[in-house]
Image (cartoon, rainbow, N blue to C red; front, side):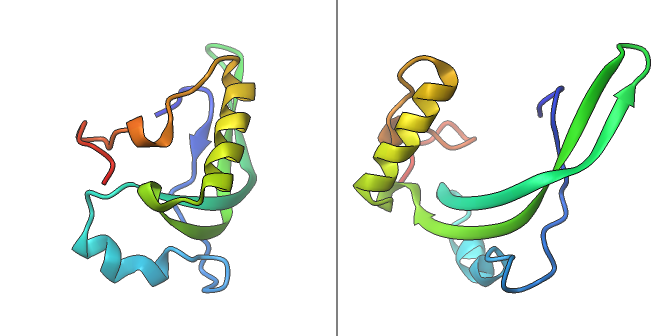
Length: 108
């Protein structure tokens, strides 16, 4: 987990905003698969650490829209994400088909 930004674990309670709930059965059936989603978020809290004089924002997911399996993302979306990731990192990121799950297994 990041030391400079925290993620609030709670998801929006509103069915319209929380697209994750509709995936429950699919997630239980194939938990090993890597999926993609669009999220909208904001800062819900800022924690000031006195010892280090750091401010640590906590982001809260406001809307979660599932896109699909990482292996089935449309090419235009892949290109847009890779372009944004390259801009953020200042280098060419790994292509979608080389991203691995937390178990170091392939994305399939």
